[in-house]
Image (tube, rainbow, N blue to C red; front, side):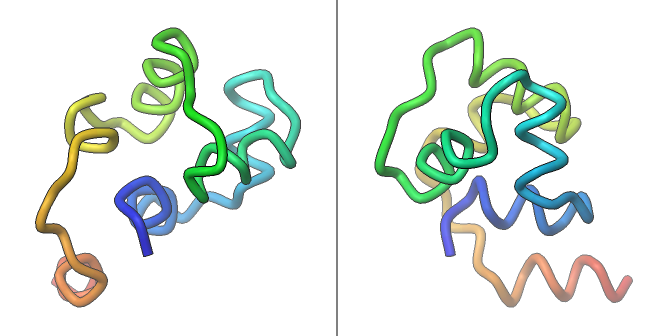
Length: 75
């Protein structure tokens, strides 16, 4: 799982939720989330804002793991 997917799951959003909020198709958002396409800077900012996160947290490599996300949810 990548950081963008983890951020979306942590925020309890579906791909469709994010796509609708940022003004792209669910298919396009899926491509962005899977890494098949790269989001432009405006789209990246929209995604980060919607998920209440910093752009760097989502789009720069991190050491965030699936386990850490779910442990955070349990707290």
